[in-house]
Amino acid sequence: MQLVRRLAVASAIGLVLYGIGLWLQGGVIEYVQRIVFLAGINVILAVGLNLINGTTGQFSIGHAGFMAVGAYGAAFSGVKLQPVLQNWIGAGAVADGLTLNVGLLVGALLAGLTGLLVGAPSLRLRGDYLAVVTLGFGEVIRISFNNAKFLGAATGFSGDSPSGLPALTTFFWVYAWAIAILILIRNLTFSQTGRSLAAIREDEIAAEAMATPTTRLKVLAFSLSAASAGIAGGLFAFMQPSIRPEDFRFDKSIDMIVMIIIGGLGSISGAVVGGIFVAVTLELMRDLQQYRLVLYALLLIVIMLVRPQGLLGSRELSEVLRSRFGRPKAQAAK
Image (cartoon, rainbow, N blue to C red; front, side):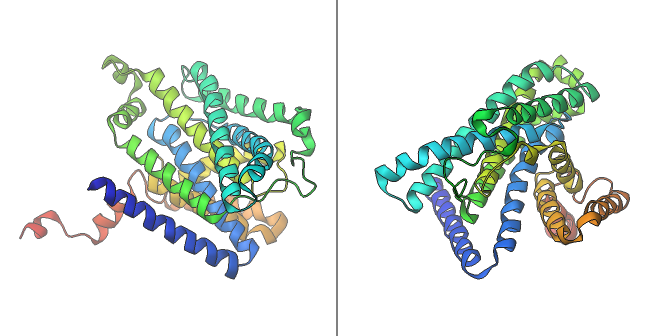
């Protein structure tokens, strides 16, 4: 019975997303659609990064590199796979959906393996040392793509078509993946493994003394976070005619950190709010040109002065709403 209920809920969510996607496609200008897509991609990035920076307490500032791995992996595999699927089942939404999702899975796998290779040696470090190492690995990944001639090097990768990469990213798939990753990370965070990750954040030495496999759990969290960044990178890639190494510079990693700090470190709901906030704010300020980043920085300073713990702190949105609008337990009992 519970399985039937879950399938019904998933089907209802899918229909709602499909309906909203059709409305956006037919009644909203392309610029607004792009902002909506970027907001969903930012949610995936922020929720994934929050697992390692917020829940586990490890400071990574090189996640743009994993996003780049996912973007290039998804784009390259998608370009090679699409003609095969179109010859097999014909051109259309089914072939496009399969191309996109297989590409995203390839990108997530490559990004997760890269996260494993990076995390296994570096997560034995702590604090500033870990931050510097992850920053270095992120730049190494970007520079590697910058010199990879079969991926277009500095000019970017656009596939074999003159029109560039196929535009496969849709509202439905962006938010379907965002919801799936949100549920996965939430279930992990509030599981026994998640409590062990939180124990590492609070006191790693004490967690080790209690026989918690700290290094293995940190590498697991880092790999999952990298894989989610890979999925976001793949969705981003299929929004563009081409992808360039410059799309994944150090400032992209900073934007991800800003998302989770604004929302509140350790809060999944806060990561969602922060991701949407950054996407909308940066795009609305785009017309201000040279003043854009200055005003954005001033806005962040104001938020940190007024709300240094983030918009939600370490709490979830449901807890905040319950504390503000819910009845106290004593009154509810009467």
